Length: 291
Image (cartoon, rainbow, N blue to C red):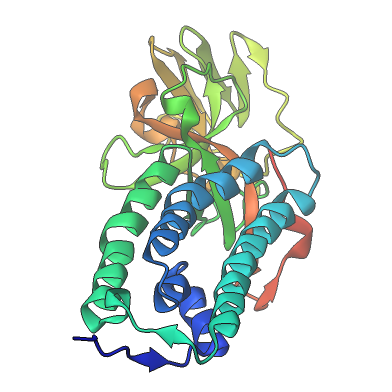
């Protein structure tokens, strides 16, 4: 007894649209479940690591250090979409429906991507990098409100040695549900003293004029507030003394103490996007700036 063959038309535009929505979805529509799964795994598990790795470690100068990874991601997506459309076009009216074209196969694929591959890929990426938006001006003029930055998180597990001047993201000591970004001023064992806004490290004035701003000409007595007159204190082992570059408008180690090395999440890589909230425009001159 011959089985009934159900033939259907594969629409290239639909295959392409499905691949845009979920990489590999168009291949599943074309009856290629193995290829669909492999492409989805590549897009969600490998693609993100590839893009973030290129962005952090590329030797290119701004804005190409941001543009290149974005172009690579776009090229991969275009290749997946073109493959789905080409296969659908080749099959034309001769396509025979298979079990991969059942509704439950489509639903299962979407669930796999949304609840397994995408979250797993995000966790893998977070071992290497993480994105943050700057919501306040405590690091101005280095970082402005509306800057979107990436941090290199590999320092949390590769044993990298942090240096004075590094800008780091860390868990706020007084509330570890919050994450702060500041500049390291004092390394373990160093003595920090602030007199009339001038920062001294081991009795030597810190040359910070190129990256800081002090907008209040007034001097506050250290007995009232530690902003302008502080210390001396010696930074304990496995800890850092951090300050915001906007010296007069930053709550930092002067007020709440040291940051433990184990609480540092990563070191600033640079700005991948910058939006001027006051004027509602893109700050193109800041995109791709690195440290």
